[in-house]
Length: 196
Image (cartoon, rainbow, N blue to C red; front, side, top):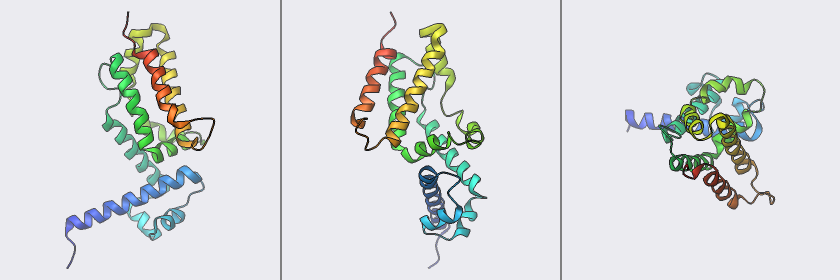
């Protein structure tokens, strides 16, 4: 009995996702430059030609992985609208959870952001993933001229959490079960207190 149109679409979506998941893992673990389409196909257990059915080339595959990851972040609605002390803290915690839940994507993002040439090509895809205007407005109201310092501090916290959570597993110097609670305590003390 032939498959229905819906079954064929589901199979195509499943294969496309398998290719993206495999590529994301290999790009993050072995580096973009060292991962070939052959290696992706072999690891996924599919024919090399099937990769080209869904993606023009390796760069298109990487681009689609990033678009999907950024779309998930946008769907989470981080730092949207007018932020309050409470909503900022909730968003920071949600951000840490997203980093943990989408660990392969963030491992890839963190790894590639240090590779010359690649970071610049991906920047337009990621620059809209967080509503900078809402954060700027919040910190400007609270800290005035020091707003940029506070935004840099928050950025550093999120990048540091990403690096430690994604690459620090097994490190005795960084007890991961204490990392998120410690950072959240810091965020609450620094940004969660009501204005006087």
